[in-house]
Length: 274
Figure 1 (cartoon, rainbow, N blue to C red):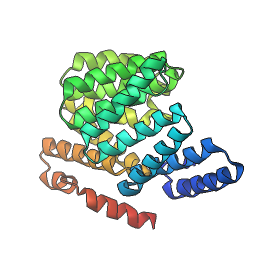
Figure 2: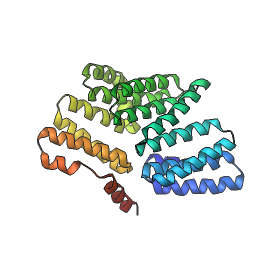
Figure 3: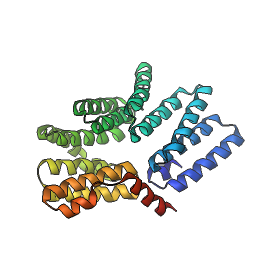
Figure 4: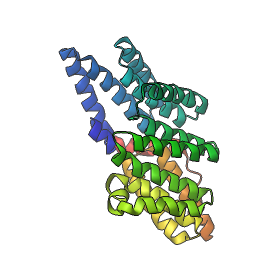
């Protein structure tokens, strides 16, 4: 179920989480009962089915609380913060994240903190709080380096900082973090990191006024996002291309990419799912 979720095959993921739930009930395995609930909530969040996502994640948190599973509560609350963010409830998202951060720091745990700080940076970016965005990305990188999963997290946090500095006209800082990323370029820019890298490098190209490169990277990035059917990310990728076409003086293509209706995206992707 997790694997299908990570590669954007949401229908298959939901079916497998349902099977997990049924077998977990039969086996009286409380941990997997809760994990199946949480997994479905995460899938519904990325699908844009926010009503079902909210109900299921809240149910998962209540279930974990009765079992005193603090680790899973932290993960579920982080998922709930993402849901709030996607709906524009930034204060509520921040409140959930702050609970997670306080709990993890108090326990000396770093497994969740990199993602929590990274998600906080994404919210600050939406609110045009660029200083807070960069601070949170630095915290995410620091937490990643202290975690047991440094090798996985670090390239993601580096690309986040590259994109942030590129969008805030700090090309000297961009070069610093690009050099860090390129210490193992093949690993850090391909495979599971490719979309993060494309997101960063398209912004670098735009900041340098290399608009054709920005267009190429941005188009490749949008193609990857469409494969994953993540609505908010698709919308953001479309807006970037609109910005590039505007800079190129191509008003017709700019209009085709912006503004993108979130409702239209959701309906379009739902038809493909059916």
